[in-house]
Length: 196
Image 1 (cartoon, one colour):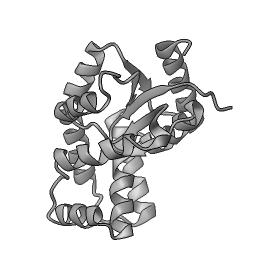
Image 2 (cartoon, rainbow, N blue to C red):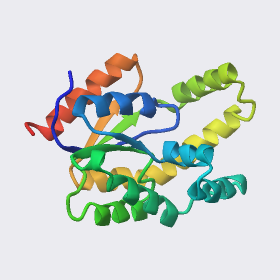
Image 3 (cartoon, helix red, strand yellow):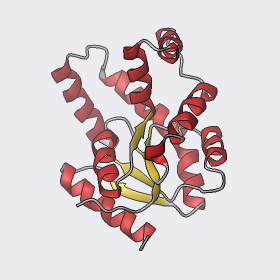
Image 4 (tube, rainbow, N blue to C red):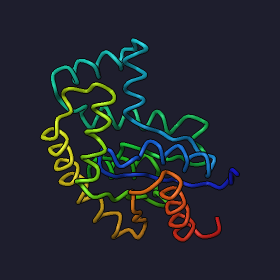
């Protein structure tokens, strides 16, 4: 059942916690688009756009896409008509500067809630190693995966603090079946958003 109510949401969590899977369920429940910066980058690269070419050059150099470019892409996407009544962001913002840029884009209409998928590092590493084996990702070694988890934890800690201060953080245990996690998220968001 799709409930139509305006909601400006964000989902964060460590690599391998199931954000993408849960993002689509949340977006469907609230009738808003799920906006993933990673998907936007990949679509532009695949489509051979000017933006895609710029992003591909950055990635090939092993660098992160700069905040200025990421902010520009998100600002453009949030101006599209399907995001007028709300959205679910996945993969953005990744740092405090991006949060402030997003605040500016939303023109005072802040995020309504931030879902934090929490997961035990060892469980997530095991999940990602299994996925790497299935998908033939030879470069996804345990060392690389653990490093990504550490980088995520360092980058996200200030965001968790900031969203906690704003009173919009919804902590959810990200381990368990897809449906169990989805139910926990729905309960947490219902409690946070109330009747909208």
